[in-house]
Image 1 (cartoon, rainbow, N blue to C red):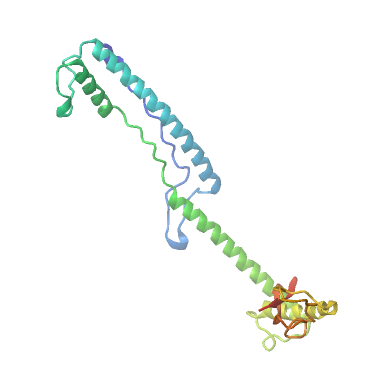
Image 2: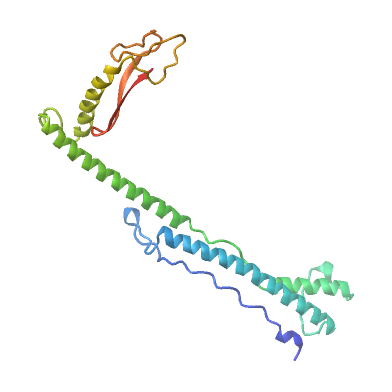
Length: 237
């Protein structure tokens, strides 16, 4: 039995399995059972460890190939080893036989694939899942704000169907609350405003005129936020 018979390439490391199931459903019903940001992060960590193990395995394979080459050469290149090479490497001298041996060990030895598994579909689904959750929360928050706005308007004597509807309740309530805050803010006039970059001295805006004190900028009130927390400010345009 030749010493080369005892040389074997080590088994490659096992590629980690994805901890989630296959995709099911389509469209809004699409699901990845068990796929979460946490399971994805854990799988990525396992893949990194696997890639490091692949590098170590590849190095071990190279050591085995080198040992096999040395033994084959020491044994006089046994005739039962078939070596196929390119035409330029055919010959009987030791250098060409060594190149031929290296070629066959390289060609027939294990290959090391370091390609990281693609997770595009899983990541895209998670991104959309987060978007769907955010969208559902936004709709829920909007519905709750609408209900509070309706109660607020009714308590102030506004008439449903005449002064506002369910669709306009939040905006109508914001307009009323904003106008009340504007009245309070105007008591502190003159006021600064967004875009106050007049060419000369300017005392600001009185909150009623369409222009600032120096007449350089045209201004109007802007109302933002919600009726519960309205924000008002002058905006030059």
